[in-house]
Image (cartoon, rainbow, N blue to C red):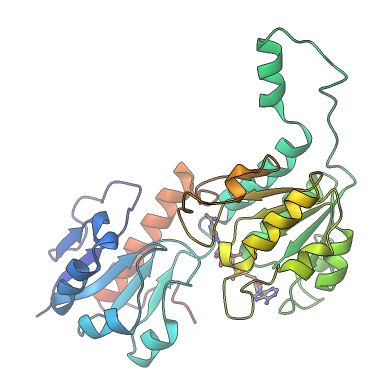
Length: 317
Ligand code: NAD
């Protein structure tokens, strides 16, 4: 009887004592970088828990003939071939919503840091400067935030931004005008073109799919305001990075906060790294002490529920 649980990426919390209820648990984050070793563990494995780097594709599934569940420590599913899993009747559990607050607060940090760059003035004061004019900031109050995608994360960003007095507009063809984010929070649903043209801040919250890949290409980026700020916490592939680099070089008044990249980590010839009007972080928008505990707790619990014969919650439809 197969009785192994494999965790191929970092949990970012300690593995709870007794996890697995007697099954063998292989918790080895180095497996993500050693595909062949991971595949060799396949035959006796009934649960595989991954983050966003392990490719769960046809090849892997063929090597895991007894797999009964896949747990995804996070939200984006672009590393998992859902169709292949469904064909084999293998449910995928994701931690949907459990790191949404973390990403929403990261976006708010970008907004506030952009208009009030405290650390820059802190450095100036430590150097002996006391230039109050030079340190004059702006306000986000009254500015427009455009959200591309208004699901779990977009909605939380919208609530927080509305509380700070921003006008919030959104492009999401799957959200109805009857949704509470429109009716109660006051978000206006508009076209992507209108959003790009009117927003001071544009924040991306769509999954990476065939339709969203390079959604923000050269022509789309060209529609944005000359003082606009792009925030991407979604997936790097949604933005054409070459086109973005071009725009940022040509318009030094524009700015981009990029938590995610098309290749992670980016290579040494990464052009965006050399630009002053870019802020780069290593895919950490969703990672906080709180979210790491909640994501791990939820996925580990639901994987066990499924293995013990009870239906897991959070199965991707
Ligand atoms: P979600 O599924 O709740 O929301 C996504 C929204 O995008 C949905 O409302 C959907 O209707 C909309 N959408 C889909 N296709 C679209 C399109 N072509 N145009 C416009 N809207 C479209 O997902 P979420 O929890 O809000 O997460 C969004 C993404 O954020 C995830 O897919 C993941 O890639 C990314 N993410 C990143 C981090 C991080 O640490 N940087 C953490 C969590 C999630």
